[in-house]
Image 1 (cartoon, helix red, strand yellow):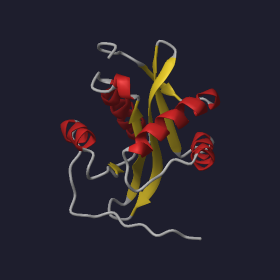
Image 2 (tube, helix red, strand yellow):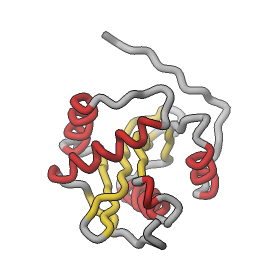
Image 3 (cartoon, one colour):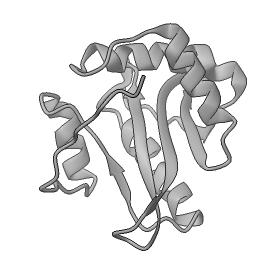
Image 4 (cartoon, helix red, strand yellow):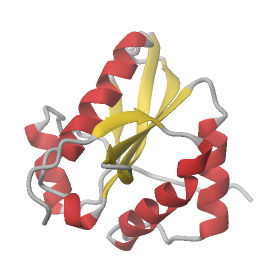
Length: 153
C-alpha cells in the first residue's frame, strides 16, 4: 500500500483507454457474470467516451490512472425522468481502501446532479463483500429487485 492517496478525479481521455482496460480486467476477475475480452471492453469504453449521455471519470494519482467509474443516462418511467446507470467502478488493487473509490463515487454523483438525474443505480456482484460494504457506507441502498439479463444475438 502506498498510504492515503488523494487522487485527482478528471474526465477520461482517449489516451486513458489502456489504463481503463487494465482496471476493467481487474474488476472482471472478481465478477462471476463477466469475463474480460479486451476487444469488447475497448469498444465499450470508446463508445462511452464518445457518448454525450455518458460520463467516464478516472482517478489520477501522480500521473497514474488508478481508478475508473462510468455512468450512463437512462430514462426511468418509475421516476418520470432521467436516471443514471453506474456500469463500472474499479480501483487498482494497491490503491483500494484509501479513499479513491469515495472520490470517484462523489464525482459521479456530482456529474449526475449537474445532468439533472434523479437517482443512480448499479449492479454489484453479490459475493463481493468489500464492494457491497463500500456502497452501503456511501449511502447506496439495497432494493427488492433482482437483475436478469438476456443476450440478443
